[in-house]
Length: 361
Image 1 (cartoon, one colour):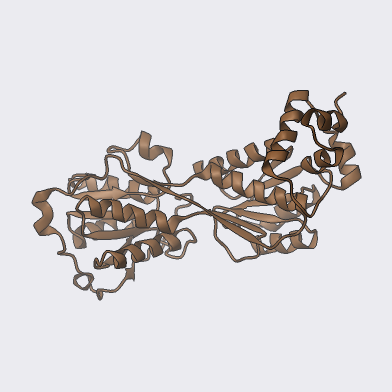
Image 2 (cartoon, helix red, strand yellow):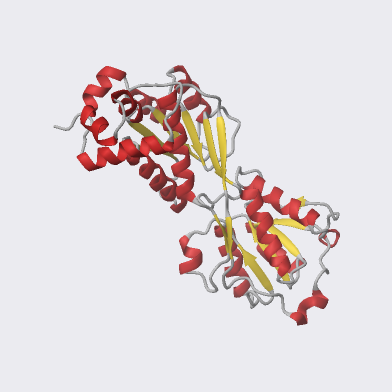
């Protein structure tokens, strides 16, 4: 049977260093990444297996993380989960998956906390999150938030840099000759992920000294096609919103991207595999979000309490068939949309519709 002493001998480090690397002991000074990897390499080589029950009795640790989401079926959640599981497996932790219902989530949180875990990862804005944060704080269980920038009281927040992603998407289309832009969003203007994306749109429009017209929601596409004439670039708050626009615009005979250049947000698989034309988008690195939030939470477990921290993960712009260079013949049409012509002033407006479709991100 392989012991910690065997690992220490193989890695050329002390017994206590191996114990810290495996999370059996806490230390105020964290191990370097190089030392930790040396120990983990020895663990893999020798085939060491921790006695989880003995470890729980000795340290009170369960060597497990809970992964909680209200939308486990969504592609982006799967990406985050893969990153969490990769990092947890690397550092010797297991992952419990918990689906949080929108009705009575408190009952699920109570069961989850009763079953014990060392830390909790919440994906996005969970229903009843204040209840979970308060209960976890009382039990001294750190909670991390994945894919959501929040001041709700999380110990760790990891999210993609959506604001810069939208800014860069507009700049790329500007370089291709487009000058008239419209922001097309969810019907709920204040959904947490829409806010930084809209902020990025407003920032870059100011930077490029372009007029900001009316914002439309996905339920106002028909109206938009009337009041925001082509040629026009459409910046969508999600790939799902972009798909709705593509379908409606093409149904009405508009050519993509000659009359409307369309870019989404999220880089979901349907945009590159099912859309015709294929959808340009801002790509979020979901697995990196998962890797980062798991690593930071486990680091807190091993080194003790540290201040709350956050981390932004870079995004990237992917241009596909739904965007292209603005046709030279359409330049004289550019600039002919004014928010005032739609019954508003030239400042930013927001169209709101009453219906909610979940899962578009």
